[in-house]
Length: 131
Image (tube, rainbow, N blue to C red):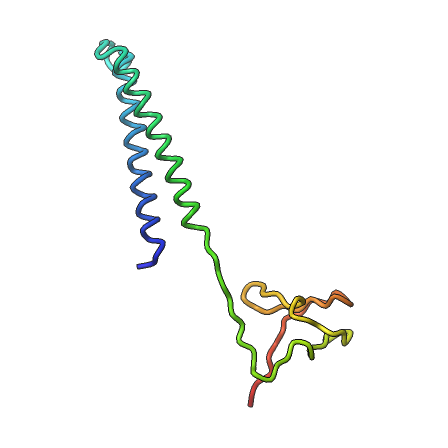
């Protein structure tokens, strides 16, 4: 199981409880207003209970939305393993020959990309085969 599966299950449970609260509140309000069959049953108490159930359902819905946001937020750490003889200060731009530093290399979509500060050339950093 993924570590985030607990958050997912919690969000689903909150959504189900929110739906139940909103439905229950709506039914109580409908019954209290006499709209169901024209009979005034529980009156003012029913209206208060219906509003409380609706507010609780909406609050649970907001909590579920926040919980799913927490689930989607992730920190990803990527470590690039360069060969032992690679020295960053010795790297030169393919286009203009300008010196490149570690600040000029960014990871974009999983590939190391070089952005030359001198000629503004952007290219993918490739490693020559070791054999």
